[in-house]
Image (cartoon, rainbow, N blue to C red; front, top):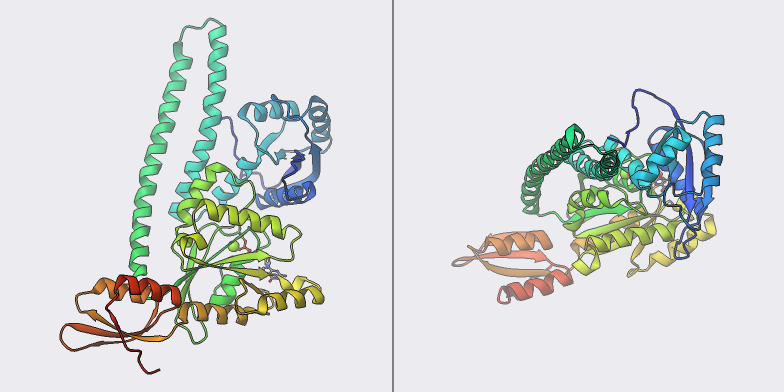
Length: 441
Ligand SMILES: Nc1nc2c(ncn2[C@@H]2O[C@H](COP(=O)(O)OP(=O)(O)OP(=O)(O)O)[C@@H](O)[C@H]2O)c(=O)[nH]1
Ligand SMILES: [Mg+2]
């Protein structure tokens, strides 16, 4: 393989992190903020970042991305600082990566390679590991094939006649294809099991709430506070990879299931979007989505835009009939006036956001009260279902709060339940004749 992964036997590797600034006007973030994020990614991989650099990139050079002058300059730095790794915060073609490695005599990693490597290290579950391995194989295989195409052409030029080289390439390609097929089959199997587990859970009468947000926004910290858990929450990009589920008690409301998920990041490598897709099933199926934002971050708006984009791509959110609430987290880091302002803005009943601090606990009650209302609001109804209508009953458990259930006259089951307005409207369509006069509260 031409792409080397980081050598785990060497504990500390010193790195230069380089952000090529393409000066895109549509870019909401400053180059310096992007550089900071890239440093965070490098550190998440335990690299020791000894130097950082923003390189203006007007016209990319095909062979090396950066211009010849810059390449030389960095070669000098690499030598002087005894670097092991240069992280290029952009996408490098396989050829560019190889050329830079030759010029600088160090390992070169691009943004995709970096994120893939972090994911590979963080994956804990079987499914997570398989997903990442597939994504990584896809990334490496494309490099391999292209590199070899190049070599093949060279050999052809030397007048070689087929021979062992070509056979080797074909064998290796076949091996990769076989491995991909095997991994996919295994992944399908794991996912089928998980889907079954989720279906079983679907029959449990709990509404589900999913946490989503930019990496490091505070999802796991909030998860821990809400569920009294101790999942890993750290000042580290992609601390969470595999989804975690816990029961959540709401004040006066019925219990719900809360899920913590992987964070998002801008310019997510496309190899990983696929891997994300399955992991984010929990989000797809959730009744309520909490979009956790680091409201104290300078990049808060840009990050929120990235998250919304991924949610759109995954076709989750309001369009899909899910309720989305923004959690404006980390208000403890804001000056009092700003904090006050945000609190006032989000205080209103119909506000789509709640301001809080997952660390200090300020505002947490606002959120739980709000959630309890969402999972629990609506008038008390009396509903008559045919005893054989298990499907209707299951629907009520899933979408409302069933208070009592009694076997009535004849073949009926009488259910008293609370349904929020949208669920009520839907159920009126599904079972128009099921409603009886309202029960006394
Ligand atoms: N000051 C302050 N820090 C917070 C707050 N919430 C979270 N943090 C810090 O932010 C960092 C990231 O928190 P996590 O909960 O791990 O963030 P996450 O969204 O789960 O991140 P990933 O799993 O990496 O996507 C940690 O250092 C937390 O202590 C908050 O309300 N105030
Ligand atoms: Mg987390």
